[in-house]
Length: 114
Length: 115
Image (tube, rainbow over all chains, first blue to last red; front, side, top):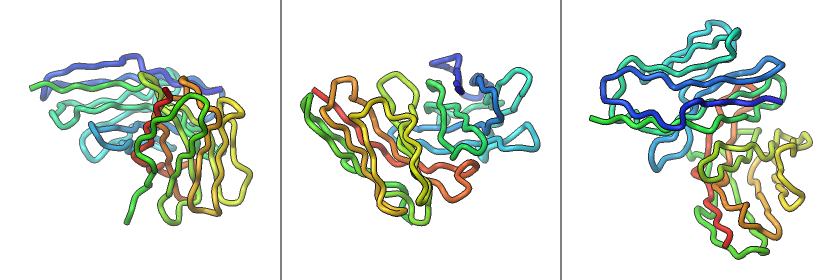
């Protein structure tokens, strides 16, 4: 079975500071990796995903995540956060060739303060 | 175009009653998923539909839970004899073919409260 662990339930940070949201997964088979984001009063939406190829993936709003197979991690980073990045972030995996159902972590609440 | 829609947005029911939750996926999305999010927890997979294939029901927590999908459109999730632990936000998502790599688009959810 697969599992996802997000080590921090809450991450407070000041505006323009760097941030890293940690995600580790457990799986005996190959997986795809995702970060989803839920802004206040909005639905869940995809932020970025790793399917294959380059282990570093980027989003359009400056976030990046790196797949590290040896450490089974997929940490999310941003060098300088904005107030508008305040949201809950969910790491997820899906097993290749098993229909795409997502296994989610518990979520990390990112709170950006001025 | 329209996104994934769910109804009702909120549902309050009494313990022991049955409830039915509805999901309208994005047109053309053959894959449809149900998840639930209990307070303070991550999302849990419940069930997955892909076209005319048999659904993957491996996430349903008990036989009180069932779901149906009409072709490649509307899906309903039914919870019979609701219990207080069923209180959660129930989320529906859909994706294009190649579901294993496709982005899942989530609806706004149905917030269920069982008294």
